[in-house]
Structure formats: C-alpha cells, structure tokens
Image 1: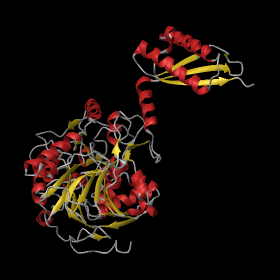
Image 2 (image 1 turned 45 degrees about the horizontal axis):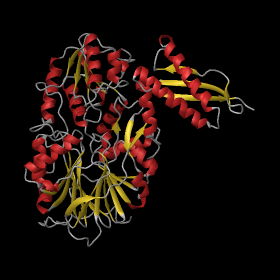
Image 3 (image 1 turned 30 degrees about the horizontal axis):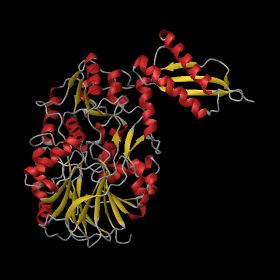
Image 4 (image 1 turned 135 degrees about the horizontal axis):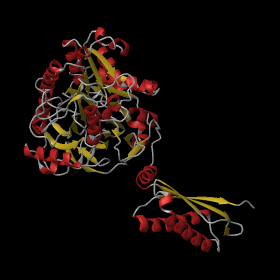
Length: 582
C-alpha cells in the first residue's frame, strides 16, 4: 500500500445531480453499511466499500446491560470483515471513546488491520489499550495531522480527509470519504459549542464541503429527542467552580474518565481553590496521565498527591476525582459509598458532585449509590435543569439542523442511536428541506449503494451481536446467553438417572435437585411427583430401542410441561445419565 501514507491535496468537488431516477450501472458501485451503531447506543462500526478496497470508520463496544448475565461487552460480528480482509485499507477513528475504539483489541485478534488512523490523543489511548492486550505489533498506528487541515489519505479509489468537531473529548473529528461515485461524510459524535473549551469546530470546512457537494451524510443521532441547543462546556466549568467555592470539607467528583474536557475543568478548579488532588479508578488514572502528557490537562505535579500525603492535610484542601458516575458496582465511587474502599471513607461534611447524567438503564444503580452517600452524611449534588453540572457531548435538535444547513447533503443516513432517535433525526432532515425518499432508516447489516451521486438501498451483509465475557475474545453464542438468562430468572433442575442400558431398565428412581428454581424443603410433594412422572416415562421408553439423546429429550419435555403447569416458570432441565457398565 505504497500510496496510503502520502499526503494529498483537497478532494475534487462533485457536481450536484437533479434526477431522482436510479441511474444505470456503468461503473463499480460504492457500498455503505453499519456493522454496529444502528438501533442502539454503542459498538459504532461503519464500512465504505468500493471494488477491491474497503475502509472502516470506528470499532467500538457496547457495555452490557443488567439483563445480560455474565456479559461484559457486546461487539459486532466481524465475519464480513474476515471474509474480505484483503480489501481493508485502514481503520479511521473519530475520537477516543470506548463506543468508538473499545472493540479494536477484539477486532485485531480476528481480522488483520494494516493501518489505524487516529488523532494524537486517540492514538495514545489506543497504544495503551493495545499494550495491555499485547497487540501493539498487530497493526500500525498512524497519527492524523490535526495541525494540517488539508491532511488526507489517498488509495486507489478513496480520498479520505477530516474536519474538526466539538465533543466531550479533545480532537474529535468527522470523516470525509471521497469515492468515484460521490462524497460521504461521517460526522462522528458532535455538537456545536460556540464557546468551546478546546478547538472550535470547522464551520468553514463543513460549509465548503456543502457548497462543493455532499452526496451522503451519516450523522450522530444520540440527542435527537432533545430540543434547542446543548449547554456550552464553559457554563459547566463556571458551575463547578461555584460549588468548589461553597464547599467546606472534602470534595469528591465523579465523572466519565473519557470526558477529558470535563476532567480538565475539574482539575483547573482544584488548582484555583488550592485543593490537592487524589485520583481513583484505573481508567481515570490512565486518561489523566495521557492527557497531561499531551497538554490537555495542565496542572503542576505538586497538586497530585498520594493517600499518605492526604492524611496530613485538612479536608478543605482535598479534592478526589474518581470513576463510578454510572453506579458501576466495582467502580471507585460505589466502593466509597459501600464503605469498602481501602483509602476513602465518607464523613459528614463531604460534598459529592456527580458531573454526569445517568445513561438510560443505569438510573437505579446511580440512585442506590446516592442513597448510600446520603446515609453516610455526605452532601450530594446532581445535574439538573438549574445546576448545570453536566452537558452532553452530543448535538441537540437545533445543532443537528445546523449540520444539515452547513453540509447540504442530498441524502441522509442517521446513525448512532436507538430506532426512535434515528426516526426523529430523519424528520429533522425533512424539516430543513431534505426530500422524504432521500433519508434511510437502516439496521445493522443493511447497505446503501452510492452510484454516480445517487443513493438507494442495497443488499444486506451479515451482521450480528457477539457477547463477550471478560476478556474471552472468542465471544459467547446466543445459545449460551439464552441459557444464562434462564438460569438467572428461573433457575435449574438436575435429574440424576441411574440405568442399565443393556438390560433396558432403571436401577433406581430418578432423583431431582433444584438450584434457584424452588426451595426443596417447601416443594417436597411437587418434586416427588416430578420424579414419578420421569420414572413412568423412562420405564416405557426403555422397553424398546432408545438412545441417550432420546432419554434426555423425554426428561426435558415431560418436566418442562409439568413445572410450567405448577409454577408458570421454565427452569433449565439438565438430565444426568449414569449407565451401568457391562
């Protein structure tokens, strides 16, 4: 791939077409699809394919909900990429959040990715992640030159560039893909902050792209339900400093470790009010270290102290920043609230600030932590309509409209959102003048065809969820997940069968044991009746020719029906056959 690392000039503009008819096929089509990120929040992964070349945009994970027992992450099924690995020219990263880079260690163990292109901060985060998984030699990390607005990468068919956006992490970018059939923009996660903490968004470049022709816009739909404009990050900074000014005791701040802009403002407030800083949570420690090296968090070394040093300071000179803003059971704040943290115990006079909003599904966990903090005597501050302790990094409705007005896309593909968010985003496109049949609500695996500046639906590719337990990169099958779901909800029943297959008879009455289904001592009559049912069924079956598989099926079928009739539950039935040796 000799041409891949050459810098190139700005892409040529594309003339707009007015015909609504599907153009005849005269050349190779460009295909666009998602392997993750549609009808969900997380595991973002988008693919652009043309002939024998293919590029990937982002490779994220989705964190499993409480309804998925024993599952830590959900990642896309990479089968299509494995089958077409020779086409892959590179993976482009829009920013360093886990729902955009967290799947890369899993991807690299299954699919050869020759190059990963990312901004310096995302590269640093990725390098540390790959070092932990011993995968640093599995690919080549190449920094996108954010000092060069004209940076681009040319391959045989693609010319890939970028533009700056605002988000909750520095160096967030949108990706521009110029193909032989037209221009595609993938926004990444974005908002429009007119008083940003870091770089301003590339309004001029987005407008230039719009004036010279954008055929397809793929844009973040996360906050499509939120009206108006999002709050500026600088307004949150002012609120945080106000709370620092009021607090008399220790201050404990919980926020997302990946929200580097917010972490930087919290550190700035600590320095301004002369509070020494304790950091808890592995991801928080890593991100602060990386961000300090790159200059995004500016703070003298003397402000970061150890636990031993903190013991000799008054409470009003200490600030603790930690993970756990989502109520995660093992995160630092949850352990502090539970009283199980080794270094920190809540005391009356502590102020705990949640500089975040609960992610949908985490409200109950966050509430439990807050209640425990109150019981321990802490003053707890949460984000609200009047407190401004948090702002989203995602565009609200008016910012989404502004993106449409700047880029002027002929076709629109809403991404990164649950189904209702995608639909609302599509409606916003129509409100600013987009044609109804030019917007596409798709699912993971559905594809679009870009042909001579026209877009229409294409064939599906294989796309599914892979459930990951810990660091088991082989993933879990849906059957395993289904079994775990049953065990968590309805428990299991083991049936011990002692038999002599040569004689065709049972040696003893079947023995049934329950775990997580019913309490044995309170259900003696039902269990004995179940054993009699199994015994009668097996005596009849063993009179003729049979197999172990047939015996197990008879046990499962008879007990499933009986237990459902008695309890309206479906425990997992596990027959265990002990056969007498001849």
